[in-house]
Length: 142
Image (cartoon, rainbow, N blue to C red; front, top):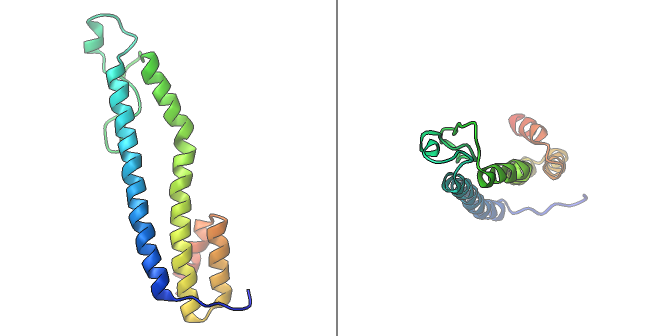
C-alpha cells in the first residue's frame, strides 16, 4: 500500500448507511426468532389431550423472552429448535462481520487522519481477518 486517499467525511456517510442496514438486519433477526417461537407454540406438543394445556411448550424463543420448559416437544417445535441451533453460527457470524467492518473502517480512518498508515493497514487487515481484539487494541491506543 503505497498511497492512501481517504475522505473521512465519505467514510462517515457510508458508516451511517451501514449502521442503518445493520439495525434493519438486527430487527429482521429478532422478528425471525419471534416468528419461530410463535410457530413452535402453535405447533403443539407430543402430549395427548388436555395434558397439552397444562404443559408449557419448549422451543426457540426471542431474545429477552423467558425460556419455555416442557419435557415433551412436538415434532414441529423440535424441528424449529434444531433449525435455529443449526443457524446460530451463521447468525453470530453476520453480526461479527458487520462489527469488524464498521470498527475496521472507523479505526483505519482515524489512524489515517493521525498519519499512522501502519496502524491504518493493521486495522484493515484485522477487519478482514475478523480480529476484533486487535481492532479494539488499535482503537484504545489513542
